[in-house]
Length: 501
Image (cartoon, rainbow, N blue to C red):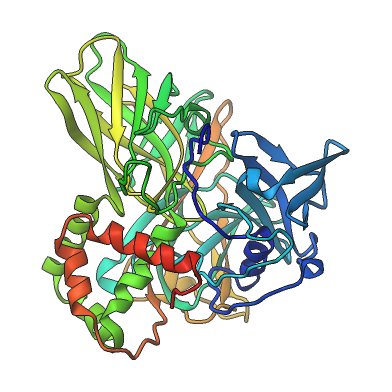
């Protein structure tokens, strides 16, 4: 598509379909064929804005946009606004419950064999939960999506999420933990890490929970994909412009993309800290389930075997990095060519989060530094990249344990979340939720505050496939380079044509 840096080639997802899919939270398993007049009302599941294929961000006036005959209609700054679905790159949907707000960006490729005919397609939107909402003084706002990909106890892990919407009220910080997916979630630990920092300092966590403060942060001066298309408008700031290629081959037949970022580099700098705001792609998240399901009726036994086999867990992590599906190599251009100097961890697909990755750039020559990423299509969503040089500043962290934790039914679960141990708060149903409160430390004069959630846990997919195991396909995915990406692309073709099971 000329002039479209996001390389969308999907043929048939209409906005009304996406809105309907959100009605059941994270996963939908039914096919419907609604009439045009039955698009959900804006006050229930409404469209709050779009990112156009030109890269413009458009926020709609309340109550939001509606879809009629292939066009989104809304008001923008009290004036009528219309845009054809074919010109939309990403939809921004706000889901409201009782004092709960979640805004989700959904990438869509839109075309219509006949505009006005709604084609509904069933798709599981994500496999990564739970959801964490922060109280902002008025309502709960979607703010974290921890331990994505931890689909069995052997993959249990810690997560470190900046809570950008959290605000103190009456001396308390309050969080809501929910299960909105057809799976059982096991939360082991929830605590807050509170950092009071000097104004102008940005505190970022790495994947191991090391927090550092940075100043002098620089956005990229240039960014382009493998076809030399300009990605700078999409990657220079954390906003609603998200670069997420569909799992389809490019013009040259490749199922991998390429992003080259160019940053100015101070003379003598030897360490660069790449601050990446990224997420696992929606299709990549869904592929976790589809690949696991290849074990058929033996799936539960296979997952259980991983819990007792550290070598297998290690091999799965190595596979994810080798294929670039759930961990992506970061290459730095040096006089001898491109060299990998770090890796980019994935995250939940509905909420991109900042992570900092330290890179050795001592061999880079000249006044600029170039970084290359080669993501397989469909597995990654990139929001922004920035860089800060040097070691950063050590920060003082106050660890705050929960003061209270109760389920929606009134059950006290505080002992289950106080420490990382063998006790868990299980959430087997999509109606499960809990409210956790923390005493807010007294603020320090002249300082600004950043709060992180340190959580730990894992989740168990609810799999009901009783078919014969397809060990040949799974073995190929795990051993043949590129087989996982080809598997995802093949499933995407089936999804487009309505044949995906």
